[in-house]
Amino acid sequence: MRTSLNEMHQIEGYLLQTGSIEEGLLVEAGMSLSNDFSQKVSAQKSAYALIRSYGKAKLADEIKAVENELFKLPRYRGFKSAIVSLFTK
Image (cartoon, rainbow, N blue to C red; front, side, top):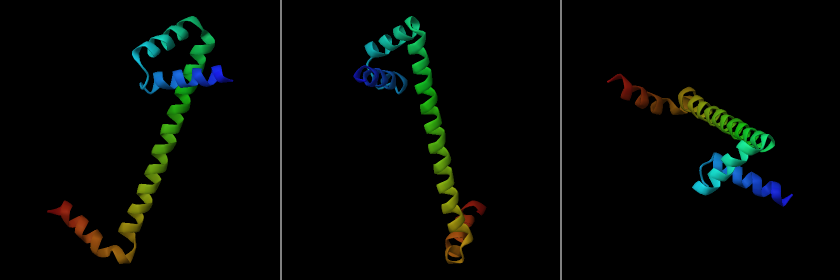
């Protein structure tokens, strides 16, 4: 179990570029020597991409919710007018 945690940490440092150059070289060597290790790196890279994509989608949803509130609710009519006037001058 500890070996796989160390391996994950090593791969994370490589993918996020937070590890040392030496650690990066070790990961690259490991990928060259072991197809299994290479697949683990690929799987972790895919997981990070999915997490990033999900985070971006959630942020976009939150921005849309704020936009809807600021530009559609009557109590923010003055704010809406002020913003629109900035872009129409």
